[in-house]
Image (cartoon, rainbow, N blue to C red; front, side, top):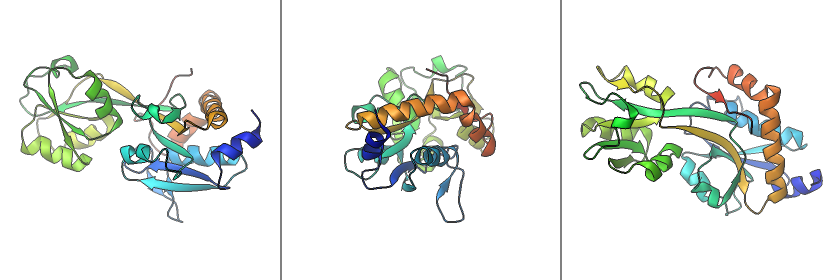
Amino acid sequence: MSQQQVVAQLAPHGVLRAAINMGNFLLVTARTASGDPDGCSPDMARAIAESLGLSVQFVPYAKPGELADDAEKDKWDIGLIGAEPARAEKIDFTAAYVEIEATYLVPAGSPIKSIAEVDVKGNRIAVTARSAYDLWLERNIHNATLHRGNSQAATIEMFQKENMEALAGLRPGLIGEVGKMPGSRILEGQFTAVQQAIGTPKKNAAGAAYLKKFVEDAKKSGAVAALIQKHGVVGRLSVAPLT
Protein backbone atom coordinates (compact mmCIF):
# COMPACT_ATOMS: atom_id res chain seq x y z
CA MET A 1 0.00 0.00 0.00
CA SER A 2 1.49 3.34 -1.02
CA GLN A 3 0.67 6.67 0.60
CA GLN A 4 -0.53 7.82 -2.81
CA GLN A 5 -3.14 5.02 -2.82
CA VAL A 6 -4.22 5.90 0.70
CA VAL A 7 -4.60 9.59 -0.10
CA ALA A 8 -6.52 8.79 -3.30
CA GLN A 9 -9.01 6.73 -1.29
CA LEU A 10 -9.28 8.82 1.89
CA ALA A 11 -9.23 12.24 0.23
CA PRO A 12 -10.73 11.89 -3.26
CA HIS A 13 -11.75 15.56 -3.12
CA GLY A 14 -8.33 16.78 -1.98
CA VAL A 15 -9.26 17.21 1.69
CA LEU A 16 -9.93 14.67 4.45
CA ARG A 17 -13.65 14.95 5.25
CA ALA A 18 -14.03 13.72 8.82
CA ALA A 19 -17.54 12.94 10.04
CA ILE A 20 -17.91 13.67 13.76
CA ASN A 21 -20.68 12.57 16.12
CA MET A 22 -21.41 15.84 17.92
CA GLY A 23 -23.73 14.03 20.34
CA ASN A 24 -20.87 12.33 22.20
CA PHE A 25 -20.02 14.79 24.96
CA LEU A 26 -16.90 12.83 25.96
CA LEU A 27 -15.29 12.89 22.53
CA VAL A 28 -16.39 16.37 21.46
CA THR A 29 -15.87 18.63 24.45
CA ALA A 30 -15.67 22.11 22.92
CA ARG A 31 -15.34 24.14 19.74
CA THR A 32 -12.31 25.96 18.42
CA ALA A 33 -12.21 29.72 17.85
CA SER A 34 -13.16 29.04 14.21
CA GLY A 35 -16.18 27.00 15.27
CA ASP A 36 -14.79 23.55 14.45
CA PRO A 37 -15.46 20.71 16.89
CA ASP A 38 -12.72 20.05 19.44
CA GLY A 39 -11.96 17.07 21.64
CA CYS A 40 -10.40 13.62 21.41
CA SER A 41 -12.35 12.62 18.31
CA PRO A 42 -11.65 15.76 16.22
CA ASP A 43 -8.01 15.66 17.32
CA MET A 44 -7.68 12.08 16.07
CA ALA A 45 -9.02 13.23 12.70
CA ARG A 46 -6.59 16.16 12.67
CA ALA A 47 -3.69 13.81 13.40
CA ILE A 48 -4.68 11.46 10.58
CA ALA A 49 -4.93 14.36 8.12
CA GLU A 50 -1.54 15.70 9.24
CA SER A 51 0.08 12.29 8.83
CA LEU A 52 -1.07 12.27 5.20
CA GLY A 53 -0.17 15.87 4.48
CA LEU A 54 -3.82 16.83 4.15
CA SER A 55 -6.11 19.47 5.57
CA VAL A 56 -9.19 18.31 7.44
CA GLN A 57 -12.81 19.34 6.88
CA PHE A 58 -15.24 18.40 9.62
CA VAL A 59 -18.67 17.05 8.75
CA PRO A 60 -20.77 17.27 11.94
CA TYR A 61 -23.67 14.95 12.73
CA ALA A 62 -26.09 15.28 15.62
CA LYS A 63 -26.49 11.51 15.93
CA PRO A 64 -24.20 8.56 15.15
CA GLY A 65 -26.92 6.67 13.28
CA GLU A 66 -27.25 9.52 10.79
CA LEU A 67 -23.49 9.51 10.28
CA ALA A 68 -23.53 5.78 9.56
CA ASP A 69 -26.45 6.19 7.14
CA ASP A 70 -24.30 8.41 4.92
CA ALA A 71 -21.42 5.94 4.58
CA GLU A 72 -22.14 5.26 0.90
CA LYS A 73 -23.29 8.76 -0.09
CA ASP A 74 -19.87 10.42 -0.58
CA LYS A 75 -20.50 12.89 2.24
CA TRP A 76 -17.48 11.93 4.36
CA ASP A 77 -14.20 10.02 4.04
CA ILE A 78 -13.61 8.90 7.62
CA GLY A 79 -16.21 8.61 10.37
CA LEU A 80 -15.50 8.63 14.09
CA ILE A 81 -18.25 6.68 15.88
CA GLY A 82 -18.83 3.55 17.93
CA ALA A 83 -18.03 0.37 16.01
CA GLU A 84 -21.04 -1.96 15.87
CA PRO A 85 -21.85 -4.98 13.64
CA ALA A 86 -24.87 -3.24 12.09
CA ARG A 87 -22.70 -0.29 11.08
CA ALA A 88 -19.87 -2.56 9.92
CA GLU A 89 -22.03 -3.78 7.04
CA LYS A 90 -21.15 -0.55 5.24
CA ILE A 91 -18.11 0.72 7.16
CA ASP A 92 -14.66 -0.82 7.60
CA PHE A 93 -13.69 0.00 11.20
CA THR A 94 -10.38 0.17 12.99
CA ALA A 95 -10.05 -1.39 16.41
CA ALA A 96 -11.28 0.98 19.13
CA TYR A 97 -9.02 3.81 20.23
CA VAL A 98 -11.06 4.53 23.36
CA GLU A 99 -13.77 2.70 25.30
CA ILE A 100 -16.69 4.04 27.33
CA GLU A 101 -18.59 1.95 29.90
CA ALA A 102 -22.33 1.57 29.36
CA THR A 103 -24.56 0.67 32.31
CA TYR A 104 -27.97 1.39 33.86
CA LEU A 105 -29.48 3.92 36.20
CA VAL A 106 -32.43 2.69 38.28
CA PRO A 107 -34.96 4.90 40.10
CA ALA A 108 -35.38 5.42 43.82
CA GLY A 109 -36.76 2.36 45.56
CA SER A 110 -35.85 -0.02 42.74
CA PRO A 111 -35.31 -3.64 43.83
CA ILE A 112 -32.77 -4.10 41.01
CA LYS A 113 -29.29 -4.56 42.46
CA SER A 114 -27.26 -5.82 39.50
CA ILE A 115 -27.05 -5.55 35.71
CA ALA A 116 -28.15 -9.19 35.38
CA GLU A 117 -31.47 -8.34 37.08
CA VAL A 118 -32.46 -5.80 34.42
CA ASP A 119 -33.21 -8.25 31.60
CA VAL A 120 -36.35 -9.65 33.23
CA LYS A 121 -39.84 -9.90 31.78
CA GLY A 122 -41.88 -6.82 32.62
CA ASN A 123 -38.90 -4.49 32.94
CA ARG A 124 -38.76 -1.51 30.60
CA ILE A 125 -35.41 -0.07 29.56
CA ALA A 126 -35.23 3.51 28.28
CA VAL A 127 -32.47 3.95 25.69
CA THR A 128 -31.42 6.57 23.14
CA ALA A 129 -32.34 5.30 19.69
CA ARG A 130 -29.50 4.08 17.46
CA SER A 131 -26.76 4.78 19.96
CA ALA A 132 -24.00 2.16 19.97
CA TYR A 133 -25.29 0.75 23.26
CA ASP A 134 -28.85 0.61 21.87
CA LEU A 135 -27.56 -1.58 19.03
CA TRP A 136 -25.88 -3.83 21.61
CA LEU A 137 -29.03 -4.05 23.72
CA GLU A 138 -31.13 -4.86 20.66
CA ARG A 139 -28.97 -7.94 20.09
CA ASN A 140 -28.67 -9.02 23.70
CA ILE A 141 -31.84 -8.16 25.63
CA HIS A 142 -34.23 -11.12 25.55
CA ASN A 143 -36.82 -10.56 28.28
CA ALA A 144 -37.11 -6.87 29.13
CA THR A 145 -38.44 -4.42 26.54
CA LEU A 146 -36.54 -1.51 24.98
CA HIS A 147 -38.21 1.90 24.74
CA ARG A 148 -36.37 4.42 22.58
CA GLY A 149 -36.13 8.19 22.73
CA ASN A 150 -34.89 10.28 19.82
CA SER A 151 -32.33 12.08 21.99
CA GLN A 152 -30.75 11.65 25.39
CA ALA A 153 -32.98 14.37 26.84
CA ALA A 154 -36.12 12.76 25.38
CA THR A 155 -35.04 9.35 26.70
CA ILE A 156 -34.51 10.66 30.22
CA GLU A 157 -37.88 12.44 30.13
CA MET A 158 -39.60 9.22 29.01
CA PHE A 159 -37.83 7.20 31.72
CA GLN A 160 -39.04 9.56 34.43
CA LYS A 161 -42.51 10.30 33.10
CA GLU A 162 -43.39 6.64 32.56
CA ASN A 163 -41.64 5.38 35.72
CA MET A 164 -39.53 2.89 33.80
CA GLU A 165 -37.37 0.31 35.51
CA ALA A 166 -33.98 1.21 33.99
CA LEU A 167 -32.26 3.94 32.01
CA ALA A 168 -29.41 2.75 29.78
CA GLY A 169 -26.53 5.08 29.09
CA LEU A 170 -22.83 5.81 29.15
CA ARG A 171 -21.62 5.80 32.75
CA PRO A 172 -20.20 9.37 32.62
CA GLY A 173 -23.53 10.69 31.35
CA LEU A 174 -25.51 8.79 33.98
CA ILE A 175 -23.25 10.20 36.69
CA GLY A 176 -24.41 13.63 35.55
CA GLU A 177 -28.06 12.60 35.87
CA VAL A 178 -28.08 10.69 39.16
CA GLY A 179 -27.81 13.88 41.20
CA LYS A 180 -30.96 15.21 39.53
CA MET A 181 -33.01 12.14 40.54
CA PRO A 182 -33.03 11.77 44.33
CA GLY A 183 -32.61 8.17 45.42
CA SER A 184 -31.64 6.88 42.00
CA ARG A 185 -28.61 4.58 41.64
CA ILE A 186 -26.13 3.62 38.93
CA LEU A 187 -25.52 -0.12 38.80
CA GLU A 188 -22.01 -1.44 39.26
CA GLY A 189 -20.18 -2.88 36.28
CA GLN A 190 -21.10 -2.56 32.62
CA PHE A 191 -23.33 -4.34 30.14
CA THR A 192 -20.94 -3.36 27.38
CA ALA A 193 -18.08 -0.99 26.63
CA VAL A 194 -18.78 1.20 23.61
CA GLN A 195 -15.87 0.84 21.21
CA GLN A 196 -15.12 4.25 19.74
CA ALA A 197 -13.35 3.68 16.45
CA ILE A 198 -12.59 5.22 13.07
CA GLY A 199 -14.19 3.91 9.92
CA THR A 200 -14.16 4.46 6.20
CA PRO A 201 -16.51 3.16 3.50
CA LYS A 202 -15.79 -0.49 2.68
CA LYS A 203 -14.59 0.34 -0.84
CA ASN A 204 -11.48 2.00 0.64
CA ALA A 205 -9.35 -1.08 1.39
CA ALA A 206 -5.97 0.68 1.36
CA GLY A 207 -7.37 3.56 3.37
CA ALA A 208 -8.86 1.19 5.94
CA ALA A 209 -5.54 -0.62 6.37
CA TYR A 210 -3.77 2.69 6.94
CA LEU A 211 -6.33 3.79 9.55
CA LYS A 212 -6.04 0.49 11.43
CA LYS A 213 -2.27 0.85 11.72
CA PHE A 214 -2.58 4.52 12.65
CA VAL A 215 -4.92 3.74 15.55
CA GLU A 216 -2.72 0.95 16.92
CA ASP A 217 0.35 3.19 16.72
CA ALA A 218 -1.51 6.05 18.45
CA LYS A 219 -2.50 3.77 21.34
CA LYS A 220 0.95 2.24 21.65
CA SER A 221 2.81 5.59 21.54
CA GLY A 222 0.67 7.17 24.24
CA ALA A 223 -0.88 9.68 21.83
CA VAL A 224 -4.44 8.61 22.70
CA ALA A 225 -3.73 8.79 26.43
CA ALA A 226 -2.32 12.29 25.88
CA LEU A 227 -5.55 13.38 24.17
CA ILE A 228 -7.62 12.05 27.07
CA GLN A 229 -5.44 14.11 29.43
CA LYS A 230 -5.51 17.20 27.19
CA HIS A 231 -9.30 17.31 26.98
CA GLY A 232 -9.99 16.62 30.65
CA VAL A 233 -11.77 13.30 30.30
CA VAL A 234 -9.45 11.17 32.44
CA GLY A 235 -11.49 8.53 34.26
CA ARG A 236 -14.35 8.88 31.80
CA LEU A 237 -12.60 7.58 28.69
CA SER A 238 -10.16 4.66 28.69
CA VAL A 239 -7.52 3.87 26.10
CA ALA A 240 -8.71 0.72 24.32
CA PRO A 241 -6.45 -2.37 24.48
CA LEU A 242 -3.94 -3.00 21.70
CA THR A 243 -5.01 -5.59 19.17
